[in-house]
Image 1: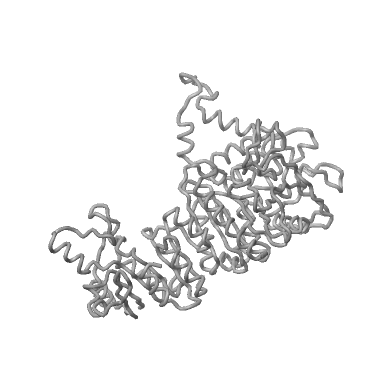
Image 2: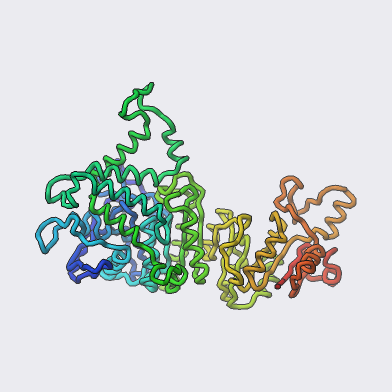
Amino acid sequence: MPDVIPVDSVGIVTPKIAQFAEPLALTCGKSLTSYQLIYETYGTLNQDASNAILICHALSGDHHAAGYHSMDDKKPGWWDSAIGPGKAIDTNTHFVVSLNNLSGCCGSTGPTSINPETGKIWGADFPIVTVEDWVESQARLADKLGIKTFAAIIGGSLGGMQVLEWSIRFPDRLRAAVVIASAPKLSAQNIAFNEVARQSISRDPDFRHGNYLNEETLPKNGLGLARMLAHITYLSDDSMDSKFGRKMRHDAFQYNYDIEFEIESYLRYQGEAFTNRFDANTYLLMTKALDYFDPAARTGGDLSKALEKATCEFLLVSFTTDWRFSPARSEEIVDALVKAGKKVSYAKVEEDGGHDAFLFPIPRYMAALKGLLNRIGNQIKEEAN
Amino acid sequence: MRSDLVIINDWIKPNSRVLDLGCGDGELLSHLIGNKSVNGYGLEIDADQINTCIEKGVPVLEQNIDNGLQNFGNQSFDIVVMTHALQQFRRPDLLLDEMLRIGKECIITFPNFGHWRNRLHLGLKGRMPVSEFLPYNWYDTPNIHFCTFEDFRRLCDERGIKIERWAAVDGDLKGHLWTRLMPNLFSETAIFHVSR
């Protein structure tokens, strides 16, 4: 709980809900007749609605990116270190929009919502939603907020894929695309990790073919296991070693199957904590969205050709110890953008935090973001005058 | 702008596709983008310089040239520029080949080790030259492959590299007659515009 709201915090924020009555045709062939998106905004939208920044969240993120919901909150939003007055994403100059994606479990329509046709919880019947569908729904939210062109759209990991899709699908609706610790498509190893996560969920006896909420059970073991596995891939070998090493729970080995090492306890805690805040069907859907994403598939495997339509400038950032989406994956995007003659900058940040580093306020990384966004902010002001 | 950059700026045609190897704070590219509408990228490894480029709006890519340039296609740039850096690489000759593979033309500038002051320093004092322009000691210098104006000209000859034009610059960029007549002796900076 914050005793006092820090001066560089956006303070107490209240989520808003946008209702959409126009059906959304999904990539999978199905459609949603109506849906809602929960979102938060920070800062003030200027008169010509040109100072907006959209934040796209990663696999387990949500709309609560910055500030506090109440003085009782233990922690601020998931990217509070980057968003706020005077921070890299400066709410003094920009109006920040952060939403929970469709199929999420934090207030946007998803598997935990009621299916209007059956009156029951969607569960596993919720249609598969792709990155393309998310971007389409985000654009509709932008329409509703009166934002025609974003000053920037920013996302890390799966969020970065949404940013990439924005740049291709709606080239005239963003000035800058910031793609952080991301990839143009998943590798076989990435998909393999996702599949193990999915299997651990669907093989949990409490999963009930995804109908667990209607049957009043919860696949906590499976979801927890999925999170434990994923968590390992978010950290680097070095960061795990420096944090835990072979630190033991007791003074001597117990020679049984209980927890011996601190890392075991940490992972179990992470898995358990996750099951209290996240929905298993949503997790399945999010990992599928990751697997399906491959914009180059639409242009015969040529990423450069896929990006030809983009007109915004790009900033790519990777982290040296990230092995989930290694720097080489960001560089694939950079090379394709250079080949297509697009305006792009790329920073490979030395950092031992692994994939999770994209959430850390690393000075060099924050300065790069700030440099770009300040320049764009100034351009917007000049154009207005 | 640094004197060699002023000359390069004049040599680059408007709307060219430019790759600047070791672009620093993006001074040259920033100028070229602003005044000649070039489509350019700089390669750099220094974090602060990279952030300066991002702030200025100069496209900059973090890439260590020592690890190769294979990610750039054959003849994918109109011009590849390298200012005051060639002497810092392990194999300048191979790097020159790479530059000419990627670019239709290249512009290279380097400090001319044959400048009379260097010769005096080495000849009379018998010690490696240290000057305002080359402020390093022999053991900590990043410049591991010094060459003279004449050395580079000969390398081009041997490799069948065509010298489109050259310039010899002394500190104040005046382009004195003697610098033009005897560049190997009087130029502080050598500038070559080459192609295959």
